[in-house]
Length: 152
Image (cartoon, rainbow, N blue to C red):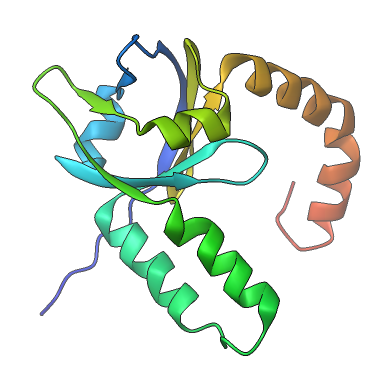
């Protein structure tokens, strides 16, 4: 019998990228990510990182989108064309490709945030701006979410 393990990422970690583009992955995340995983462009100006099982599930969903719709093709292209498999070195670092660092504005200070099935990788300045925006609107968001039965 095949046993499926669902990974749940959570927490916020601050790190820096070195001049070569290497980023330390927090040990709590490395335990679930394994020796290699996928990083791709994310939404809101960050990067998304998926363990291999999570990435395969995401890929299957993208493959299921009808190609006859232009927005489906654009959506799949956005995530798949920019995706890169990265390997964790002996120091717990990955080398982020230059195109992904540029997309997310990653230069030095970085935040890694666990968000359920994925990890988001943010530039510190973008993360701080997002946190302020979300703080200002969280009451309204929570009200709308409670209508979905989330029990907040």
